[in-house]
Length: 284
Image (tube, rainbow, N blue to C red; front, side, top):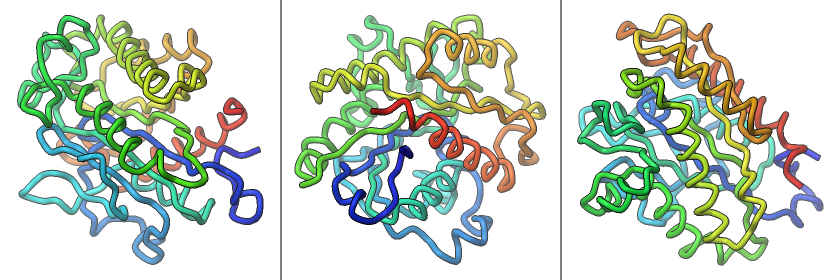
């Protein structure tokens, strides 16, 4: 059984798939929409709906038809690896599915690191108790992300006749945590646990305690690649059968030596999609 079933009689019995996605700039997207793969420009997206939040900009618990964009007033028309993932899902299942995304460039988990607008992904109980969600005047990206997930469930997903099922948590982040790379293992482990626990409490579904988490590594050419961060990812994968690392050390990047170029973003998108299909047997 595939993670995303094909259209037809069987598909009509299946709950609507949901993907949750989060991270910093390489998740947000830094490739011009003019450089979207030809197959996406030709066919577009027919079935993907998303709710996008970015720091102070809220997803609002509402969905719209997906087309890549970022919350950057100087240039909104940009895409990341996830645009390829959604396209491949769209073409496979040929029925509506949902994406809930929170991404903001230059953001760290560890509060000892520099982070855009001083917003953080930290799951530290002390930090979370000290601030509100980033889209509600605070600095917590994790609260903004999970609160939007909750609002999406309340406003739309819980009203779907076929029901819904959150399939996976996609993530690319870590460049901004290079300064405190020795803490990345415990910091990211806490983020994943926080999101999974939130979903269990929100939905009452214990299966989300084992929600597949899929993340990418970094190009060998990236100026902010940290071997300690990469080692932390693999250590987490060794410990958690539902934590999956997609290697992308061979990805090409832009002249800034940080962001994936169109080929690099497309490559990561295909590899993450491949991992989604590979781990589908783990979802019952």
